[in-house]
Amino acid sequence: DRHPEPQFEPDPTKKTLVILGTGWGSVALLKKLDTENYNVVVVSPRNYFLFTPLLPSCTTGTIEHRSIMEPVRTILRHKKAAVKFYEAEASSIDPDRKVIKIVDNSEIQGATSETEIPYDMLVIGVGAENATFGIPGVREHSCFLKEIGDAQQIRKKIMDCVETAAFKGQTSDEIDRLMHMVVVGGGPTGVEFAGELQDFFEEDIKKLVPEISPRFKVTLIEALPNVLPSFSKQLIDYTENTFREEKIDIKTKTMVKRVTDTTVEAEVSRPDGGKERVVIPYGLLVWATGNAVRPIVKDLITKIPAQKDSRRGLAVNEYLVVQGTRDIWAIGDCAVAGYAPTAQVASQEGNFLGRLFNNMAKTENHESRIQELSSKMNLQAGNSAEAAHEIESLEKQLRRIKDIKPFRYSHQGSLAYIGSEKAVADVSWWNGNLATGGSLTYLFWRSAYLSMCFSTRNRVLVILDWLKSKAFGRDVSRE
Ligand code: FAD
Ligand code: NAD
Image (tube, rainbow, N blue to C red; front, side, top):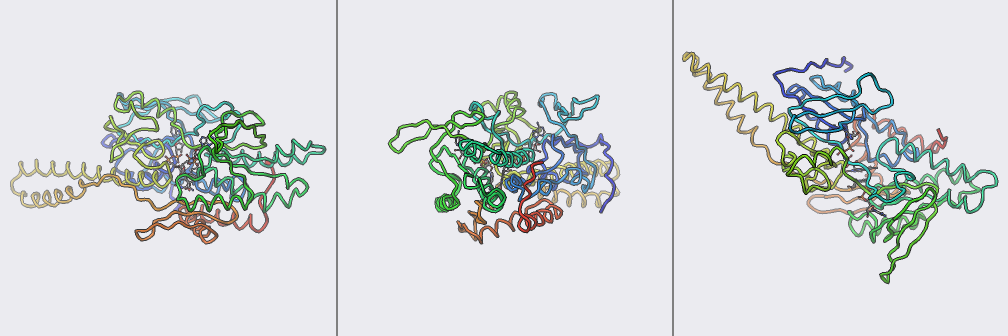
């Protein structure tokens, strides 16, 4: 169905709905939304949707990055009515004037790179940024794992470390440092990345650079007493045991305090309650300590008195309306609705808003039709029976449409890949809970993630990448 993109002409009789972001929340909303009801405008610095669950696999080349991206323009082309997309960052929101300011921060800019967009309704789905807790050196020296560019940078750095370690006459201490891959944060991001990295080593690096490969080491540092705090005890133990077998060194109760270009300085809590300072040399450092609030969200919080106690994001009510506002909704990692910041929550919230907005538009249409019919009835008594009948039916439909239940999250379970073809899963199964780990779970992980991919194109590309890296090994060229 390769029809041309419908032209966008703002209709003055319709409300303008501005959606910020092209992540899990906003794209789920766009998928569900009947775009004919509003003048829809999407603003995001990223002109694609990113399937984050497979991002750790891109850091080692198990999957190529473009296989998990879907261009937003392709997504919008399939909507019934045209949607306007601007590749830009929203830099501020003015809830009193109902306008947002947008800035094109990309490499290429035209004569105009900053402007304002008015809205009647605004949805904020800008996600979160990486938490660093202000720890010195983190921003300058470590890699994050959130965006496509991060995964590409890590992939390049791993091979740079390996090639530099293999340099003629490299000193022994330097080889150990360069071959030491340190991951900070034992949440699912850190765990999945450590697992992927160890796979890369076992399946490829070992064969390609056998002379230095015994020096390759992955260390996972976590401040709390265990990794994967949100998983069940049984799966935490399973993950920690698997990591031990894979020779991934887990350092728990170890809080990083400072980072330099070659070392991580951490405070270790000893069993006797004392604290010890350790210095760990590294070649590659990946920082995965969770989410922080984006500046645009922080700025909006200061403008809304009802948000004065919001610390982790915009507090929303059960219909995802930002508390203290009437026409602003927030979804996903930037919203605080009482759920974890996951893709599952964000996409269910987006989907809910899509249905809510479709219903709101239907309600308005029905109400204005009822008004039109009532005034006609008053004018021409002859047709009143027919009109009264239509009004009755419309009112019946209205009662059903208006009865929108508040948002309720339905947890489908948690899944994480832990390396050596093993995964852990906490899933709800017929009212019970199933906590499982192992190779069968890994097959389940693969099929679950495949089914969640955005499009058939993504699915096919991911399968081909898996087959390709299995058959020929990962591509270690450092582009
Ligand atoms: P995002 O998906 O982060 O999207 C935010 C969007 O807003 C982006 O398009 C961004 O470019 C845009 N944006 C940013 N700033 C602005 C601005 N100023 N103006 C306009 N637009 C802006 N969750 C799971 O449930 N299962 C998993 O397996 C899983 N795996 C993950 C693996 C990794 C490596 C990571 C990092 C996260 C993972 N998550 C997973 C978490 C999940 O990705 C997030 O919870 C989810 O992306 C949140 O969706 P969102 O729409 O709120 O934000
Ligand atoms: P997280 O918040 O889940 O974990 C971060 C970890 O870093 C915490 O355990 C914290 O104790 C630790 N930490 C913080 N500061 C530290 C320091 N200075 N030194 C050492 N350790 C420190 O972060 P995440 O893993 O990036 O996940 C973010 C969100 O995305 C979560 O909601 C998660 O569930 C979701 N996610 C899910 C999956 C999955 O389901 N497979 C994968 C990735 C992310």
